[in-house]
Image (cartoon, rainbow, N blue to C red; front, top):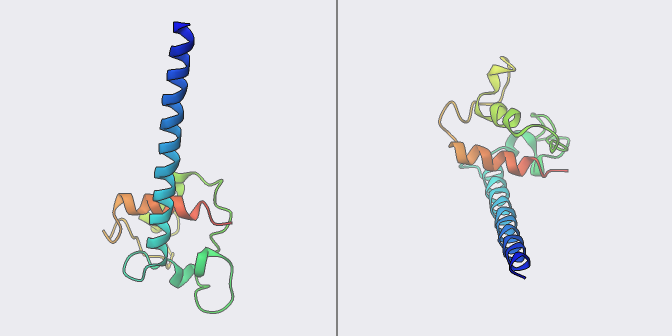
Length: 117
């Protein structure tokens, strides 16, 4: 009986941790969306379009950001931090290297763009 109580308690604690982890992920994604769409922060939509989706016309200068969920988070982070490392002729500014976005803000943008489908 004591073993069952310990197992149930451990399951409840791990479930609580998992739920809180998802909540913080949701908060991070929401913050990333705010940065993506804000003219005063990332202003990503200026080049990548609304929601990062493929469009014609203004906001189509940058690549389509759909279906990046399989990309490693570090690769996306590095592209935002300093795109010139992998593409020396990139038109995208180095948001992290130039200090325009903090480490946490870049992580939030990465979390958001991984959800664009």
